[in-house]
Amino acid sequence: MDFGHLSVMAREAVELLGCSRGGVYVDGTLGGGGHTSEMLRANPANRVIGLDKDEDALKAASEFLAPFGDRVSLVREDFRNLKKAVEGIGAAPVDGVLLDIGVSSFQLDSAERGFSFRFDSPLDMRMDTRQEMTAATLVNTLEERELESVLREFGEEAFAGRIARSIVHRRASKPIETTGELVEIVLLAIPKKFQGGRVHPATKVFQALRIAVNDELESLKHGITGGMGVLKTGGRLAVITFHSLEDRIVKRAFREASTGCVCPPKFPICVCGHKPVARLLTRKAVTASQEELDINPRARSARLRAIEML
Image (cartoon, rainbow, N blue to C red; front, side, top):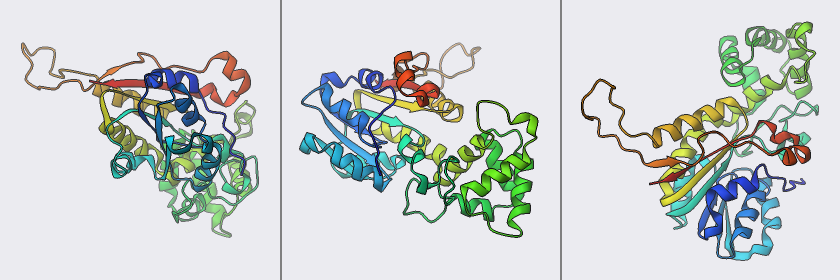
């Protein structure tokens, strides 16, 4: 598989992490190694620990990052276990952590992985092929109400109920096994007048199933906690997200980490004792430049936020 190395907002992320100062950094979502390579180039003294649960990503990154030698260490691990992984190799505390959330361009462009409706392929969507559950498992085993909940909660799909009913009806005669079959069901379930926009009608359905298969939102919460847990004082955590569900989780976590007293306004003195553990480096999310968007349109939905530990 050709993973390529087109990383979203690499320059902005490296600047927010302060990689020019030199230190030890963690790329919790290694992918093809694009962000890691920029971290390493920022200062010749930098070291990076790269985590990824996708075996194909690790293989591609290993080849791409080979010129950096022992300045980079690669570990096959879900970033939800970031703290355990970093402490396990004796690297904590570190100077910075980066999380680039969501499916990579490489996974979307790989027909056999089943992430994209552009290809008629097995309905898989696993980022870690060691796990048993696939998108086909969910589509063919969840109760109608559970399917509707997944599509509504993780995809914010307005026609979740209609699509769930159509899926259950279709699988009664034959298991749904391919992305093409699922797209056909979605197109039949959604009224024609709502199918003419720029966004493909199946986009939210595929997003919802991918998030559910890989437990992405819970992984993000654990990854943020783990990232803050391995940072030294003055260390920085940066997170790049690609849809509102992820961004809300990051925004809430960073706000809580940077907030002091949470007592009701009427209290004359603080009794909660709550103190901030970090300061916000980004009051508003950073977005990709027009120059980057011209090269990589997929960066349009990306949002970058960062904090510094106190």
